[in-house]
Length: 125
Image (tube, rainbow, N blue to C red; front, side, top):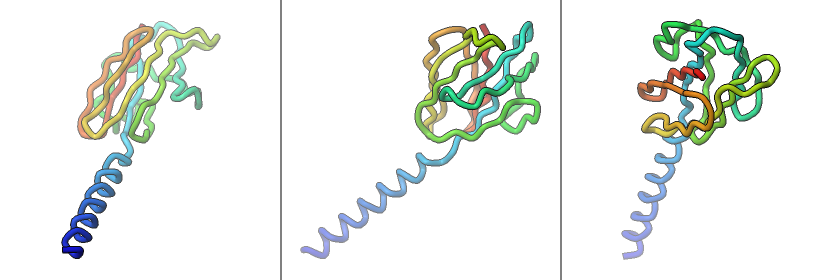
């Protein structure tokens, strides 16, 4: 009887560890803006200010070399788009899960499409 319980616990722990490893899979993101009247910069989690490329037709996918590409961990990330003076145009939070990306937008507009763990994200205002 003890062997059966011990075996059941081992199987349960194994399944839990597999689940955790699956959620740790990085998510690819391709950031851009389809609105090009001014130069915009992206901050992810308030770090790494990067110029946001202007792609009027959007990004084809996460491998689009013209987009700003990053690999992000599963979980929530804060996005802020600002001009060269630091004025905020778009702000929100994206949560990456194994099911894709969900967004909560505070300012501006964030459009996206997700395939597997790849999200193309367009910031407009």
